[in-house]
Image 1: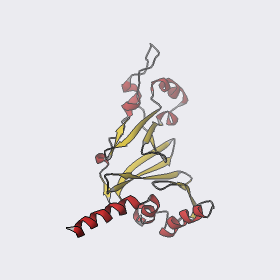
Image 2: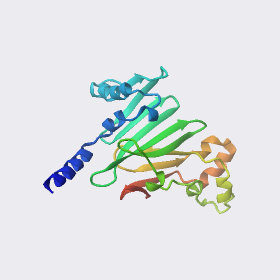
Image 3: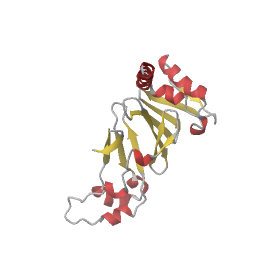
Image 4: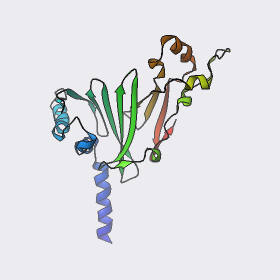
Length: 208
């Protein structure tokens, strides 16, 4: 009985001692096609030495770690792609990793994934219900209201996500207007909510 109790105490201490950098370094190459394990190790070494955390990736391009805390990191993988990671508590002894990959096209577009700390893929639906296009629609204060929710959602939906480096929140922004013609964008703008914030509560993201 004492052995079992000691085991769970040590397991809890191990989970609490985890930091995002050690989890990031252990990331399998299949999930990090441009960065080698040596690249991932070098980032933190450079930062701790007061140097700019820039490495040459597998395609001979430059990748940079822009931010690193105990539970958050941000990378500029290429000129047109970035990646954020956040270590989130699932319970007292288990953490999960939220990864946001953002790609620049006509506008920034993000993909969100969740993993265990040993990089097994987890179901997105277990941790968040992502905002839909219509969630960014609001009635204009203009009494004419020339744009309906149906008109709004006919446009291509582009959504950017950003993890917080200071708390466990995530913010979503609709970037649709950046990808459509200027005239349509000006017409749609009064009907769009700028951003939606979700907080991490009880092991999942909940809309604020």
